[in-house]
Amino acid sequence: MNLTVSYIQERIKNFKPEIGIILGSGLGDFADNFESVKIPYKDIPGFENSEVQGHKGQLIFAKVNGKNTVIMQGRYHFYEGYSMQTVTYPVKILKKLGIKTLIITNAAGAVNENFNPGDLMFITDHINFMGTNPLIGKNDDTLGVRFPDMSEVYSKKLINLAQETAEKLKIKYQKGVYIATTGPSYETPAEIKMFRLLGASAVGMSTVPEAIIANYCGLDVLGISCLTNYAAGVSNNPLNHEEVIETANKVKESFKLLLSEFIKRL
Ligand code: HPA
Image: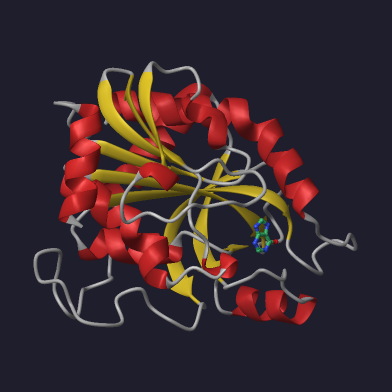
């Protein structure tokens, strides 16, 4: 971990990030217009080379509305075969680089029948349905405790700020519980029915491992899902990745606006 941190610090000189952002499927170009230092994951000792449709795989260090920000353009997914350690390693590194706040974004299916593709949803809580936990293994006491409290993983203060920001910008939003599966298959209609009974409003294949680690190491987390499709069985349409990317692309502009205005107000 020290080698990773020192390699990055060498590249960014005395830039000290305060805010971290993980960009989800189709939302990856948020960082494209900022003057920045870009470091591909493949160049970073300790990172693995990520490749998945719709993702690039680099860290971007930039000033966003006056705030020092580090952006993960692309993330590691458990369904790609990476271990939970690999999936969450970047979050630990961002913590070591000094961030206090982590904004985690994703594309997700709408489980709540009142929500629609194109809606943004602020995550109020999550259900870990991945069947494993990124903290399994020896504990690193320099990062957090063995048995971390999980009663407010997603900061109420940040959700309030995000709501105020969305209202000011007249961007429609929802709030709800995100449930994470391993993927990569989408869910069956029966699974979605169960998830609804369990209290979930959105379903996806990411975010939860990163949020567990962020909470563990004391970061304030805001989670935003871009609802890209009705979850299985909600409508009669079969699901596909192209639809996910297409909807994410449609929402991208208002999403980027929300993100940069939110950062300004942080
Ligand atoms: N299910 C799981 N993950 C997803 C979905 C979905 O419907 N849409 C986007 N990511």
